[in-house]
Length: 152
Image 1 (cartoon, rainbow, N blue to C red):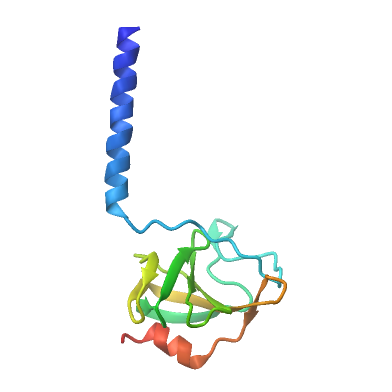
Image 2 (image 1 turned 120 degrees about the vertical axis):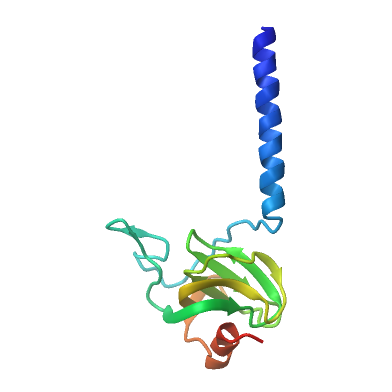
């Protein structure tokens, strides 16, 4: 019984140490944000087909990035799937921007012009909130894409 208690104490201590280390590595943890998209396609970003990850779907624009993507306004970056994040801003409350294919993500609150993440390619979609609360994919505005692609 004494030996089991020591093992339990060791495991608890190890768990606390690991949690403390993990928490200090990424203080900007964000919950995954799920949204309902009005257009329902079978293949979605993040799906796997033949062992390969789908990076974009219908309505996404693919861009050779070769660097960083930037926040077009002050806002919030939240994970949406294993491959995508959503950017929202009070400056454009009826819109969400989905960015897929980025690494080195800056999750949480960001300022305009601050890096969201980086990658070789970017799959980008603009979503507009509908009166029923769902989101629909719409054509992106060039000026917003330019803000995302060019450093401030």
